[in-house]
Image 1 (spheres, helix red, strand yellow):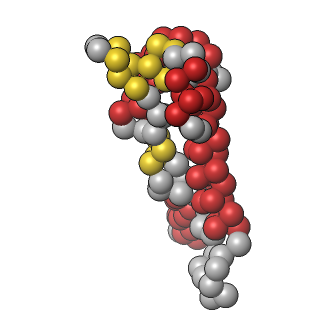
Image 2: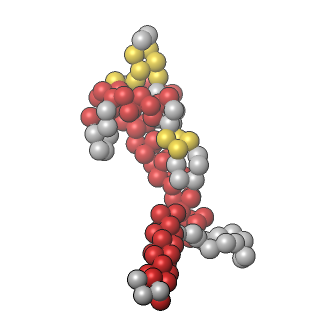
Length: 121
């Protein structure tokens, strides 16, 4: 985006930007996007571009859209890497930890039941 576009584009307060953003986040959430950003699945931190005039913070529709697209691209980079490993001997994608823990718990439970049945209990 060039400086001429920025100068002519309508600046939005964070409250206005929050009303325009998908999911209707709070203005405080939009402020966190500016200051801290959002950590994507790939580990990249994506921040919402903003300007400060006096004591007020402003962003634009274009910057809000660019933020959403940048976050989606960073997430896609992660998912592409997980689905198609670069190394031929890369470890396979692991299941979520909770699913592994539940299956292990079920297996242990079934073993315990078999032992109890063997003992006649």
